[in-house]
Length: 270
Image (cartoon, rainbow, N blue to C red; front, side, top):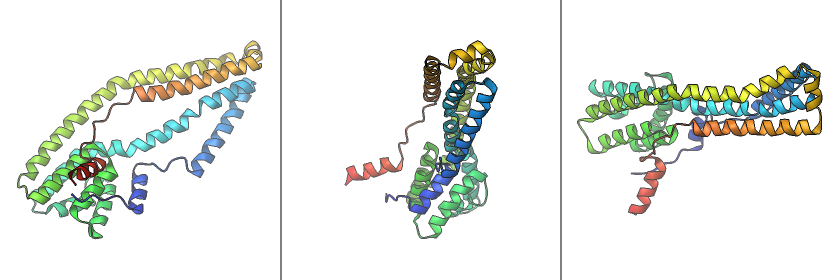
């Protein structure tokens, strides 16, 4: 199979779809202004500069969490739409459309998230790329197991002329639905644990703000030793948030049919 890498325009489309263009100049300026506002607000509330510095340092994890959620938002939404995408493909094939026409029709119908992807695939196909190259670009753009399986199924059906492609796609759609239901159940069970851990990380700082209304607390943390304790607490809070993200992340299945795997396989065969 001929491998194809995404062009510069495709890379920009990929970054746009996956919200990978993070920490731009505007975002950095916005976060700096937010941190400055938070610093003056906490200082005015507690009357202690050291506490305000420590809380602002702990709050640096918030922009990272926001950008991380944006980076995975499109992938999660697209994963949810694959069963419906497969239903649209099966419907197009049964109505007499070819595989290419069924795929390009997804740019005009179906979920809005998937239309963004297949609009780019249609542009590639109409621009002269072969069907297989468009499917490789689909895998490279979506970077998910579901996209790999759909693309490989369509390429095999196109190359070998499989008459049962509709049955295979329908079975694939049922597998995606069962897998999504299982993953959502796991997320629901572990979500409250993660939320409890986040609350446990925020609780000491909330308590510190409440106690800082007392003069004894302000005088204690106004010293160099108090600042050192606060900075250590801020560091441990950031480490705790990072560790929660690592531990709470659901493992993704390996991409057997990824573009890199195909390139490696072709290199071994040659």
